Every structure is written in C-alpha cells, then in structure tokens.
Length: 548
Image (cartoon, rainbow, N blue to C red):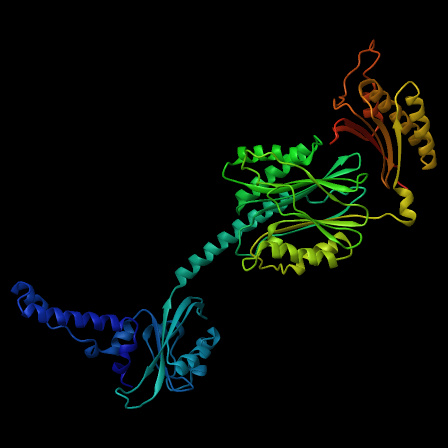
C-alpha cells in the first residue's frame, strides 16, 4: 500500500499545502526585488514538500489514533503506533468487524458504510472506547489512484483523545444537575406538603418542574382556611429561574399566609404583596391570583396581578373565564388592584394554573387557554383525576421546558344523606330589647333540630347570645344571625352595618362590659371578624363537632 496517496486526506494537509503555495508565490515576488536580498536568500532555502515526507513514519508518530480500512467490508490496511498502544496489535487484511472490534462496540461501523457510500467525511464527538477513554472520531473517504485511473476506495479513521474535555463536561453537567436538584428540593419544600381541606371544597394540586435541562422556576400555590367556612386560594409564578426564583416564591407564599389571616378582600391582599415584592427585589416580578370562596354566597371573589384567568365549569358543563379585572404583575408598583367575582355554586369546578400549562412557543397564549377550556369541559371525576387529565391534554411530559402548577377545586352538590350534614339557618335581627331573647330561642330550636349533643347545643346558644349582644351594643342595623353546620363544625356568624372590628380585651372585675368576645374565644374552637364588601362587619365563631 502506498501511503503517499492518502496524505492529501489527512486533517490539516490542505492547509499546509496552501501555506506551501503561498511560500512559493512569496519566493517569486522576492526574486523580482520586492524585499531586500538578504531576506530573499532566507526564503529560498529549500523546504521538503509534503509528498516527499515518509508518511508512515509521520503517522506512527502522530499522538492521535489512525486506522485505514478499504473495501465494502472495511478490511484493515494500517493502524499507527498510537492505535496499537491503545488497543493492541491488529491483524491487517481482516474485516473491521474482526480486526477492529472496538469500533463495532462504539457503533462506528455503520458510519464507515455511510462515509463509503456518500463520499463525504463524518465526525462523531466524544465516544467512550473500551479502554475507558473518550475519543472524537473523524472518518474521511479516500480513493486509490489519481486522475480517474480507477482503484479501490477506503476510509481513513482519525481519533483524537478528548478524555479530559469529556470529563470536564461531565463534571459541569453533574454540577448543573446538583444545582437543579437543590432548586427543585427548595421549591418543593416551600410548597404545601399537604393541602388544607375545607369543609365545602374538594381540592387537588399538581406541580411539575421543567425538564432536566431547564432550571426550576418559581411556580407556587396554596390553600388557606380563613374560618367561618371561607377559604382562600392562591396561585402564582415568580419570573426567572433557579434558586433565586424559588427563594422569592417562598417569601411571597409566607407573606400571603400572613396577610390572609387579616381576612382582607383579594385586591387588598395583592396591594400588600405588590409592595412586599418591590422590597424583596425591585428587579423581580411575579404574577399572582388570589381568590376567596364563601359557600353561602356561591361565588369566587378574586383579584389578579398579571396572572392567567381562572376557569370555572358550572354544573351544566359550561366553562366560564374570569378575565377581568387583571392588574399588572407584583413588583411593578403604582397600581390599584380591584376585585371581581365569578359564580362557583354547588356542582361547579374551578381551575387555577400557571403559564407552563398553556403557553407554547409555536402558538398564541389564547389558543392554549381555549384548549384548556375544552379539556375542562370534558373532564370529570375527582379533583386529582381532573388535574391529571388537564396535564395530559396539554401535552406536558417529563421533558417539558417550563414548570407547571395546577390546582383544581370542586364545590360538591350535597344530596341524599350528605344534605343533612350541611345546613343553613338565618334570622334577621330588628333590634330592641326582644332581639337577644329571639336570637337565643331561634338558635336553640335550630340546634335541637340538627340533633346536636346537649353540651354543644348549650355552647352554641351561649355563643349566639354573646355575639348578638355585642352587635346590639356596638353595631348598627341591618343585623343578621346565621347558623351553619357542615360535616365537621358548627359556625355562628353575626353581621351588622358598623365596620369597627371587635377585639378581645381583659375586663376588670368592676367592668360591666367587655367580656363577650373573651367568653366566645374561650368556649369556641376558633373565632374572628372581618369587614364585609358592602360596608359593615361579620363576627363569627366555630365549634368542632364530635367525631361520629
């Protein structure tokens, strides 16, 4: 085999030949007197041409691995010394499948066929060989004979050791994986480990981090029982990715839970969060939707800071979209948020979600929301089943490039035996000295009809007496008493037209008033007060029902 014929195919040979041509051209120009004679004499020193070099000796000294095969079965013609050191002696004349088993193990033989057929070079990067090292293989087609004189065809295999680069890349990938795992762990730890379970709602939520190549985001959700049968639902998305976004998300979620205890309207909660987001990081913004469900009103009162609209499917299967009002994201400042309402009566299902569920690079966001509406219209079953179906219908997989958070809540319609466990009774209080006795008699009759134990009956009547007396003394008309029972608790609530919220205080022995709220706080499982949207306030307390 004449190795000189293959020299033109070696990587870098064409560049060296071009450089030699440039030297010859420069020499011609120097002979014309373009440069000093001393310089011309230096450039005219004869340099051996590439074709005159002993090719085999050159290849044997190349640190890269070189092998030459020819024919359709790739019979081995030559391997250099570096190849022998790496894999041992190889028998020439044998097909590559037997002579070069390491290439078959790497999966390189099909590539040799492809190069031989196409006549074009191919490169595969960083393949680990049986010797434990990584190589980048370049396979170049070569042809014996010149000037169309015919001859055989072969492939020159040139392998460069890139083990150091491969190990560095693997260390980098391992570091990125650890960072992502840290962010995902932080993200999941900041999300609620178990959702609170309101009496009148069935709720399920799903969080899916982005694919392995994506940094975790700041998607979050929460369920907060406010007392008095009301429930706050919140979902948000911090812009950006990584540990920083997850940390900001945790601060916002903690703040929401604290603000929710104030029992403020949704738009006031977002107003507080907006200021907090600016204090946390003026460059970090977030979207958020905050909603409150009151089973007595049969609706969601919500406010949105740049978040996607809440979807509600009513009991007849019609899907509604809560589009307005929507303000700018949190952290922008200077905006007065407003609250809106959307029906959520018995038999309805609502969905709160982040943009990872509906946003795609190749389609408009409204198309994604419309697709989610269609999926919700046909999704039935428990909240968790609906969650899973919505995620599947959106095409979310483990390789999804964005985080996804979905929360589904149902307000079940209680029928049959369950209807006896969920009751309401209300009495308008007209004022006067007879209001308190009427309220006590009404409460006693209702609690007796609900077949409560005697002890709970008496505690309920006492709570009604104290809350009504407080309202008659400090409130203004209209006044109303409402009793409500669920499968878990008894709720007593009194509303009036004065918006001054009561507070618990220590009454001195000589004081004739100031003990009503203290008595209620002592005998009840929980109590609280809030301002009502139309003006005025509501004061409530609740008792946990005995099990069984």
